[in-house]
Length: 116
Length: 443
Image (cartoon, rainbow over all chains, first blue to last red):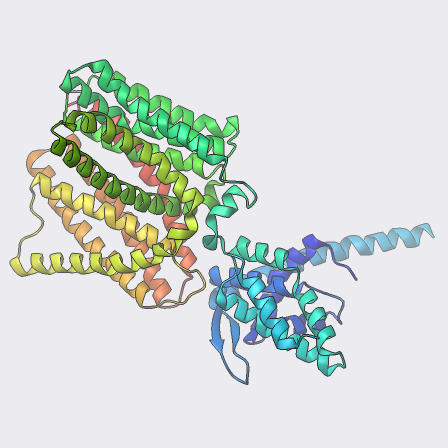
């Protein structure tokens, strides 16, 4: 399924923060997780994840460390306290947006059912 | 058929050829590419196919590098503002025209006052910044295609400065006249900055700080070369038996000094890549030196039991020193890589901020006791205000810098504080230049 560009832009930050809240990770693994969670439906352009991660580091939401755990040297990202606060804030916002959408859609269904 | 290693290294060097991608970005992307290739080959794809698919998934190099550039504006700050396709060659004639205009403009007052030195110097004191910087502002108006709506504020500031500086009945060479002259320079430089950022006032402020730093370096380089040239010319003509002194001091020096302001600005715009690599080096050299100097002077004051002398010249010297240090601090902040963790240079920077804060407090105490002993004058009040403005800036900077060192805050907090504070300097300069003269009776 194609997801509109604006929606990808708006949701990518909370998604990355949420994945990192499960524990530290690196770019490729984050993308694999996104693919898994969306049953392969959500496809990001892989490279675009990195500028996003760097922005989160600059804002202090995420820490970055180079490490060599097995074989390859990778930059690992982990959530900071500030990042956890930001994630909680994102969650509140998305929950509200989601509630509004659910409300309108169940109303639409009710109207459709009454018309039939 | 090319082997996969060659293809990966080719792809990597293609990435690195772009200014926005650093070695560590390339490392990060390469590991990603290798992970992806590995996954695909283990799913049954050939190396070649796997490579192609992996590269495609990472995204087109152009789109990728421009995304990196958007996030890391400090890596190619100039291209971002001007746009990558704007040719700098068409700049050259415009810049030269502005430089010539500035050089001519700077001569007119001398020719008009025809030998009345007091009138001439008093006029230059109040108007030199106006005469020259208006051309620099004009150059950026042309270069950034500034819309008329955005021109309202700069035009008002320039016109108001010109009116106040020349309508007020100053006592010739009195404190308020000197204060107006020096503070107008600051105010108008920030006004040039307003034009420079071309409306991106929030995001562009750091770029203007960088521009100011680079511009200063270029200007000093040109001035050094110009000084050598003038000295040699003087010597050569002296050897021939002709005195070129008046020609040099009346024409070559002022014209050169005015024109060089435009040339330096153009060089920053056109050749920024050359000096960009020097900026972190220069700040790394001078930050510890200034910190050491401050610590030494604090130690000397503690050792001898003398505070800062209440002497007027000494206080001016300390204020000038603090302003230089703040400039250095701003410049080193602008050169800081936002991704890097706190390191030794950040510790030194913190030491510089704290020691400067100490010196500022001592200077503030000295100026306050001078005021309680001898009352308010324009100079003392200007000094008091400057010290307070610096105190607030340095105090909060020290706090943010400490937070960064302890890993509690991102470096961006310090950066945002400093860029957010820039209008305070401009506002204070405007107050001193325009409000102080009537308040202190134009003395």
